[in-house]
Length: 526
Image 1: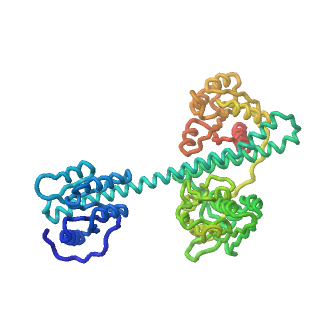
Image 2: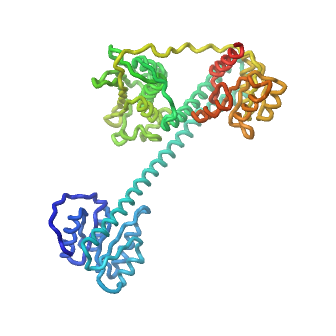
Image 3: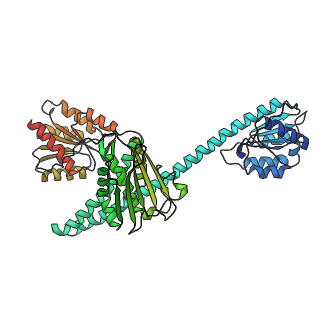
C-alpha cells in the first residue's frame, strides 16, 4: 500500500466503533494502522485470536483479520464468537485473503458468519478505506437500532409498572365500596346509621374519579389537545388556592407548611385552574413523600430576569441523582417510594411539566439524594404591568327542584335506573329507555322536554338518537344532554354536531347536572 502525507489526528472514535485488526505480519499491522488513522478510522491491533475475541467483548465497529488467523480452528472460534452477539448485532468481518483460489479457511468463515467481506491482498488503500467506512456506517445503524430497542424495552417496562399500579389503585377503593354495599344490603339500617357508609362510598368514588380524570388529563395535555383560558393573574392568589386544595393531605400527615410570599404582587398571564393544578400537584407530592411530621416550604420570588419563581421544598424521601432527569417522564416513578406515596398513578409530574411549558415556563427538580428532601422549581414569565381584574368566578348555584319531563336513555340498566331515582328526588317526571329504538317509541307517548342520552350504546348510539329526536316534528325543540365517558375535544365536537345542548362526563356530578337542567329550564321559559 502506498502511503500519503502524514496528517496528525487526535483519537477520533468511540471504542464501540474501533476496528479490531490482526493483519498477517507486524509490519502489515503498523502500516495498516497508520493508513487508517489518516483516514479517521480508529484501530486496535490484537496479537492473536484470543486477544481479538476478548476485545470484541469491549466493543468493536468491525473486524479486519488476515486469512492466516483463520487456519486450524480459528475460523470456527471466530464464527462462534460472532454468533454469540445479541440479536441486534451483525458485526462486519473483513478478511484479508491471499491471492489465488479460496482456501478452506475462507470457505469456513463465509459459511459460519453472515456479514463477511473478502478483500484480496494486495489491495489499494482507497479500497480498504472504502470497505471499512461502509462497514462502520452499517455498524452505526446497528447501534442506533440497539438504542431504539432499549428505549422501547424501557418504555414497555414503565407501562407494565404503570398498569400494575393502576390496577392496584383501582382495587383499593373497590374493596371498601364492596364492603359497604354488602353491609347495606344485608342489614337494615336507619338513615343515621347508614350515613357513614354512604359517606365512605362517596369518598372512594371521588378517589376513583380523580384517578380516571388524571389519566384523561395527561392524555389530553401531552397530545396538545387542551386550550388554556388565559387571563392576568396574581400568582400569590393561585398559590394560596393550591395550598387550600392540598390542606387535607398536609393535615393528615401532620406536616408543618410555611408559605413565603414576597410583598410585591407578581403578575403572570395564565390559566388559573391549570396553574392551581400545577402547584396543588407539587404540594400533594411533597405531602405524600414526606414522613409524618415533616416540613414543607413554598417560596414565591422574582428572579431578576423577568420571571416569577415558585419553589416547593420538602424534608421527604428525596430523589436519587440518577432519577432527576427522568422524574417528569410518563410512567416514571422513583423506585421504592410506592408505599410512601400513599396511592396515586405517578403521572402528576408529567401533568405539571406539560402545563408549565404550555405557559412558556420551565420546571426542574433537585435533591441531595435519598431521605434528604426534594425541591421543585417552577419559573413563569412575568407581566410587565399590573394585574387586571380578570374573570370573576361566581358562587356555584345551589341545586334546585327540576320541573321537567325527562327521558333517560342508557343501555346500562343500573346507570339508567339510578339516574331516574335521582331525577325523581329532584321533582322531575322521568321515563327510562334502554336502547335507541326503545327511546324513540317512548318519546312518542311521553313527549319529554329533556332527554339525557348515553352516547356509547350499541346499535343506535346517542348521537344518532339525538339527530332523530331533533328531526321529530313535535320534539325538535327538546333539550338534549349527552352523558358519556368520552371527553376528548374530537368527541365533544361530534356530540355538539349531533345537536346536544350539554355534555356531561361519567360519573355525572349532581351539581353539574342540576346546572344543565336549570339552563334548559331558563331557555324554555324564555
